[in-house]
Image (cartoon, rainbow over all chains, first blue to last red; front, side, top):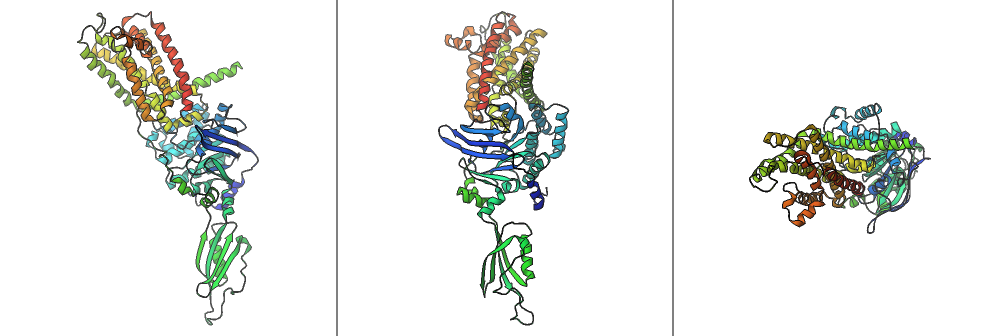
Length: 368
Length: 262
């Protein structure tokens, strides 16, 4: 639950575990054309490393789901090649299906069955035999906090619980690669964080490779080791979220300072002299990029941070206060993935989001 | 090589049984639905059957009209239930259930077989209901254990036949509304162009021709022979025709089920 409290250093260690030398998913010139001529996916070249959380980011209709479905053997590509765990989904379909798990964007648990039964049927379909089956199911129910509701029909579950059950269901076969299409779409912030926590834990405990698609930039930023931005069927850029944002520009902090004066002699300035150059402590990883001074406004300084951390602002304020300066105003701006998207795809995700899409996760009543 | 193919076969049947199990569990959770489904055939027998039994000359003289239509109404209610499996399939496609199922290693044919087996479970329940109503109304039909078993076998065949037919159509319809419409469009001609509620003898020539290619006719023939007339000579032919249709529909549904999510 305390996901956002997770110290950044801890997450950095977590990310350090990914050794990028073994590709588990490869796509070469992958193309899907829906008749007559809609290019849903356009010559994709992409590789996913073992054990990483990879995010495919883009607006609705960018081709994310089509890409995932091709990797899952559900849609045959028009041209190009795919390798999943060393196999070709086109002629080794069953083998590929055995090693992948899939959490579709839509509801993929049966509302007319209980939570336990959904897991049971899934385990059976993947040929997991007892006693292994029972132990896996009870472990998953426990891990996803679903034990108390396990024997209740899933249609009475909340959206968050349903999503957790879907992930549990995909894990019952212990896949090597887990594909998730929009894992937190339609979830409230609390449920969303709970799902994020589970995904991070999966990678921590099982070293599983996770390939997810999302149009939630916060999600991509928080979860993914690397992301690819996709627009109109093409990959626009691939990289680590942090580096991509840096490429747009690091965090810039603007401060307005006023030098303190001596209590006795008002003309005696105790702070930094106007002409004195500012030398920031090296552990801040920051440099002054702009300075201006005026009698009325005081001194304005812009500082760029290469590496941003939560304590950067307090430290910089402490530093100037320590120099005898009064900090009048602080303003920090961080380029988000939205800025990255803006730079590389030429449109904002929010704008692209406005394209119509049906409500994808709903349980409408159905007649048999 | 041989051991390998045995394992493959076991997996293929196992997956079908698992899918049928899921459906069976759903039926258990909502068993009231089964009883609601039983209302329709009961009405046909009680209202339609009773009313038309006053009209003479529809059926051969040695049988009552109620005797005659009991097999027809059973076949009809099996048809009505089985035809909805295509609608269910489209529904499961609209959710992510079908994509997830197709991403599992279960062979497509097992998915089709599993769902058609589930239709059979419902069909068997309908048959039991018809037996019950017949007892209550005093409709004289053959209730020898072997005959009852025979009826169940034909019902399984019919359920599988129509549910796979419906699943084969599902990929053409793609939306639930259209699939519902298509189901209605198919169900009634199948029903009326069969000998379910009147004998082929009183049909106009063109309708009789249609009824000879209608799988429901063969189902009704077999059921009527087992439940009523005891003329078993044509049963092998009826079963063979149904089996042929079933094979065709299984093949079409297996192709269709992969295409439906594209």
